Image (tube, rainbow, N blue to C red; front, top):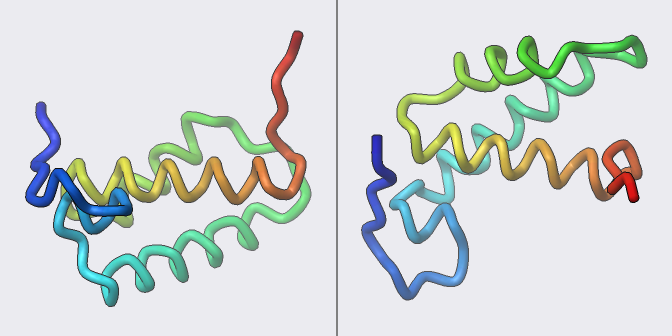
Length: 83
């Protein structure tokens, strides 16, 4: 499986792989709803990945969503580096 890079000089991943602004906004909104649906309880990472995969139409969208999902958690302090 290989990503379809349509614009190698783009300044963002979604533009590089041809995800429209409208679709990226749809996916971001769906990810927000997904995160809220988990609440504060523990969630297995494989379940999160499966839920994200169901939102996506192709590998490019899956990578886009995974990056956004991880960034969301990182910026809120939910993900950290173990030294």
